[in-house]
Structures are given as structure tokens and as C-alpha cells.
Length: 115
Image (tube, rainbow, N blue to C red; front, top):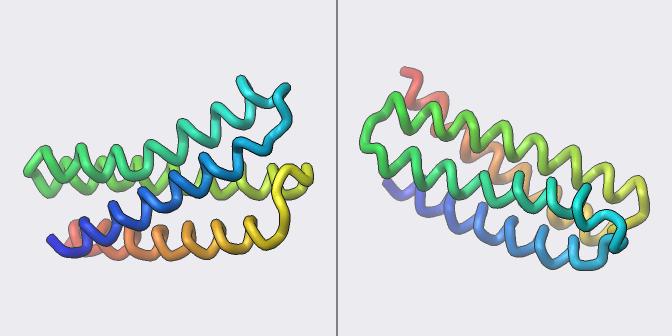
């Protein structure tokens, strides 16, 4: 399942990028935004991996849907951090592009599993 490995690679890259930029967030956000965005971003690859490991298309799709929801959460939190000026436009655009790419992969796999 080649798509799954590409998904995991890109989701892993996104997680590392989010961890990198969130180190710059204000210290008072450690238990707020920083914690929330990190939990959400790590949920993207973890749910894809767990779903794939279940060896059931129905379960895999369900976990990918959770992964997709987590990705949407990351995108909003990323936007919030950008508006609050916790991250620069260059980082925001780079990470947003990667998250869009991951979203397309997730959506494609989910749709194929529905049929």
C-alpha cells in the first residue's frame, strides 16, 4: 500500500515542522496552543498507522477519518498561531502547503475505501 507510506512520510514531516515552529511559541502557551497543536499533529500519522495495522478496510477508513479531522484541527491552530504572530508567513505557507498535500492524500484514500 504505497499511498499509506507516502501519507506517513508526509505526516511525519508535518509533525516535525509543527514541533519545530511551536518551540517559538510564547511560554504561556505551553499548556494551551503548543500542547494542542502538538497533540493534533501527532494524531495524523498515529491514526493512519493504527488504522492500517487493524487490517480491516472499514477500520482503516474510520481511523483515516479521525486522522483527517486532526489535520483540520492542525490547520486551524496553525492559522491561529499565524494571526497571533507566533509564526512567520514563510513558515505558515510552507506548513500549510504540506498539510494541504496530506489532506488530498487522506481524502483520496478515504474515498477509495468507501467504494
